[in-house]
Image 1: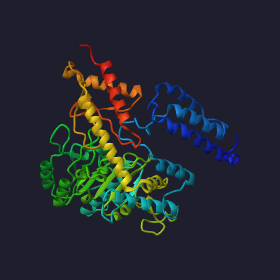
Image 2: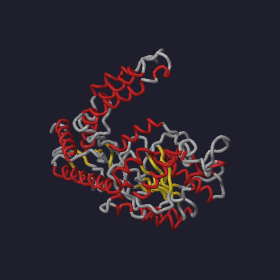
Image 3: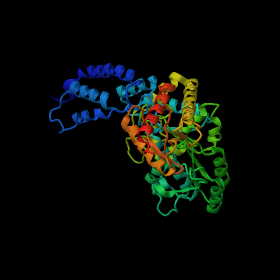
Image 4: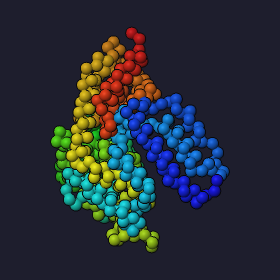
Length: 477
């Protein structure tokens, strides 16, 4: 097979094959297993030595579709409750295909005025969706980890200023360690961001008043007073095991009193702002200095899509502008753009799915989806409470329901092993999908409901499968 130039005419046919496969695949999501271990035998067909001449467009695409349709984990389907993973709305999926079709480099306005304008509108619509004041800005990034990285990068630059230093130019050398304070809900992605920024993943001082991780405000207040200088507070909106939320307004009070930077990791919990039923959980979010969130969670757009929202958006250009290349625009150049406001330079036009889904469904549509998921979480919590062999471990405040298997007659010291076995069996079974965790020192399950396709029937099947596995795996009396 010759180079791609010889197959110019094959592009339309390859896309037609993907389109033809899409309908049956999407139609199957409601009924197919989330994971089919037996299909793993097909994966070897993707490997082997690098083809010398290549099989051609048609053959390559056909193989990928055949193996993928059988072996892909249906994380876009209604019964994937692992991690916190949304699906892709119809508008977002179509726009994601369009992003590949147009293949824009969303580096800057000079590389794609179209991509730049879509991103500008999408970011402002996100600001409005969450009720943030005018003047806030942000950047679309690849994930919540990069959103934390971007936000804490701005915090680092701010902190350096307070010490009379330019950390962007000179780095952290010669400076004391940046104080970072949080409750026990701080997520691994925030630690990873601090690690990448050079502060170290263990830089966070944790102030928790119980084994679950609820923040100890009094102890944090005392520590800030002791520090007597600039510090960074990380608040958490949407604790990953049970969906709890730090008291954002109280953290804002501490930040304002002590002159600290408040960053809120709202990967999925930020969406509480969309419903009057849950908006009180994130009251005061507009007083934060930065917010991180994830579009491929409750926004239901394809991977990879996170966003950082910054109260003083000019800090993005200061922290992430690129120096020195004569052919590149600067952050304030009319031809500049969002690659100069975040960690990535050449960037896919990931704003297209965000824009399309917000244009398609608007504030009312997203409020309805969030409230439907709140209802489903309550439905799941009731099913757990009614089951004699299950135990609810935490109030379902948002979309996560944390519970464990606790059959009558099984001693307490055997429950952790039982729950770990159930979690492993649940993933291997594949009919529904949710993993295990540890909550307050106890092994547990923590299904998250954020997919727009999920129904009460899917939730009921999940409970039925869990109880079936508990019955099979419980130790003999």
